[in-house]
Image (cartoon, rainbow, N blue to C red; front, side, top):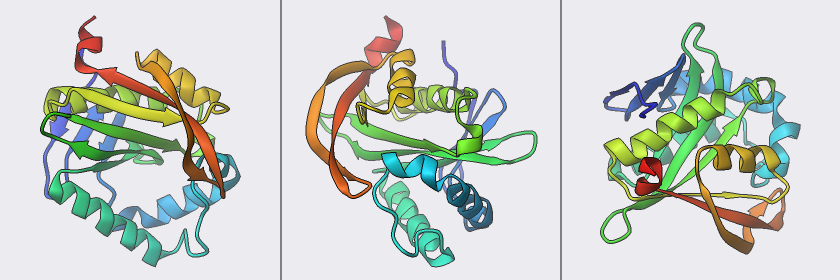
Length: 195
């Protein structure tokens, strides 16, 4: 069963729609809501993210982030989505597909974040089901990879609910909040969805 209701192509990139959420490419007009949500959620997000720069929430830093997302989208090596609630357009969080590899690999990696006030309400489950459908049904990839710090139990539970298989541990995998952190590695294959 596919949870991806609609894919709307646009110059900015695809927009996904499912179960009261729109997953849209970030736009400069999102900056005020993004800066507010990220600022209010800083203590909640910091343990799971790279250290924030001094200018992390500035308009200039957001503009640089958008240029990076647009370059990746143009090269079809990555896709960034902001999660918006349909009924009021509230920004809830984000999902990023990166390192899209074609050829013999046909795979990519996924990362995600949720604003603290919206966490634990099932929004990311809906969003990720749409992203999984996009990866396999639209991009026609074979493998979707994710990583989670062992202490990030909500993230691990989300991946397991979506059918991801735990494949191992990458020691000192990413520099998170100023320290090299181990990550559990997960993957979902296109055939896993049919099983």
